[in-house]
Structure formats: C-alpha cells, structure tokens
Image (tube, rainbow, N blue to C red; front, top):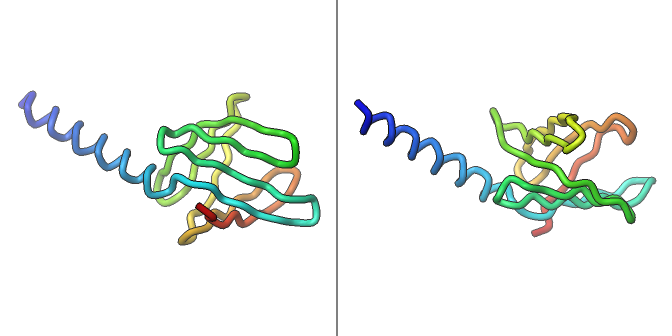
Length: 101
C-alpha cells in the first residue's frame, strides 16, 4: 500500500512540474499606460514588470487558470488562452499578455 501511495505522489509531482514548464516564459502586453512584462519561471516564481516597478510572486496552474499569489497575500486569476493569458487587474482592468519567449 505504501508503494502505491509513493507512486501516486511521484506521478502527481511529475505532472505538476511538466505543466509549469509548459507555461514558463515571458509574456508582454501594451496599453495606453505602457508596457507590462511578466516572467514565469518553471520553479513557480515570477516577476511582474511595469515601467520601473517590479513585483515578485509565486504562480501555479489550477483547472486551466493561472493563479498568481503575491507576497502581500493577494491572489490574481488569469485564463490561459493558447499562448496568451487574459487577466483582470484591479486598477488596470483586463489585459491580454502574449507569450514572447
């Protein structure tokens, strides 16, 4: 029984790592306020860059959605759409970030 549990755990970890690798990369969007760049690392860490401001965060995929956990305790949810992420932000409104790398 213990062996089966360990096997299930290993399979789950492998799939979660693979899904992060699939979405890792650099995403960009431009609007009237300027350019926004988001870097998703396969480690689950990320950086949101707008102008000269940078905000670090942690991310994961759940149910086809990108979940962003900020270090301040906030959670943002974006929808994965092919090579893009559609996300609504409290101040900027909805943005579509397209994968560039």
